[in-house]
Image (cartoon, rainbow, N blue to C red; front, side):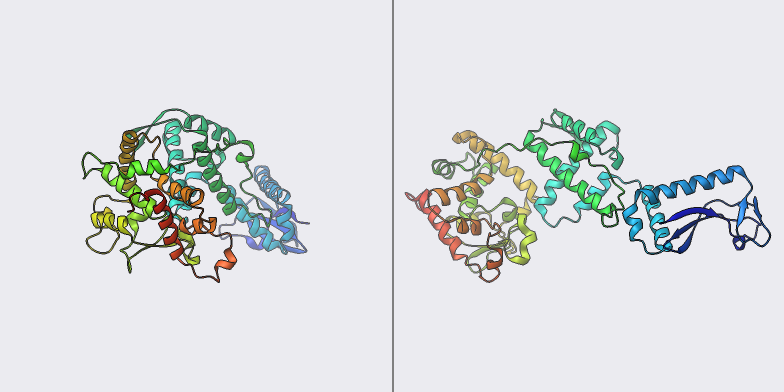
Length: 427
């Protein structure tokens, strides 16, 4: 059992005649001393005694307050104290605990550093968006981006949700933008990201093994995010894909033509994403080979790798937009500073195509969903082969370490799907 008292030691007398009272920590028959910020000459020693007595009432009160605060630390951390073998270890724990109690922990500062640890560009982007929206909210309510952890409460999250449900004006890169009210699904995704960051923050500051809990709040046990609602399937029909394929843009050099070409390219390339088209290296031995950006953290297992044979239509699109330097598959980097800007162009183009062809809510990801849906439902392709085409993690993770991937299976699935959709006019 640990005991805490204060003490003034005779041999601790300073050159100016003052003494520095210590906090005496006794634990498991060992003793350790902790310094205080108090220096006083009002000390009296009995003859032959090495321990002094404070003669000033105010100083004695200060020392008693220090002792009470340290006893509070000891009493509220019984698990940690029990694991300390010596008084010196316990004194070190108390010092660390006091320093951490005075830490000004900021949620947004921690979240910013957390973003740097994320390996996947896709995941990093979604987390970054959620944190940026939180920044916009803090600017509106407080004028800055500071969010002390003590203010990150269930009530705060409820107010933040209410704000997300309104039309709001925010400043992004110096320009005012109006953001539309968010849906339940959008809010749920944001809150899920904020919850994950909060849990990581607690893991960084709390020592659960020793029972040393600095952040005790549990806002997400009180606040409940909206439940995810089933989203409408993004797959479109064979007839709608043909409408896009046969669509003739008014100007061949517009983003509409680009959107049409890359949408069909994605469909015929097993749902290749725009970010991968932007980053993909030059073809190798007549094949498009790349690591899917969204699953880049699985490079070491090979799950993220894809290899596709370049067929007729794919070749025509590569010839039209190919990188003249031979470094990349396409030369999109010459026109768009990053893949986000390419995505913006594709969204604009697909909006026009959707309106002209009567296809509602047409998005670039529809190509990927449609490829998988038609492969499964219309062509009878097995789910394992579809997972391979989509570079999804396999259910047979252990077995996959023994079997070398055969990308001719991907080529055969693509050929089946393309035949089914374009069987009257094979491309």
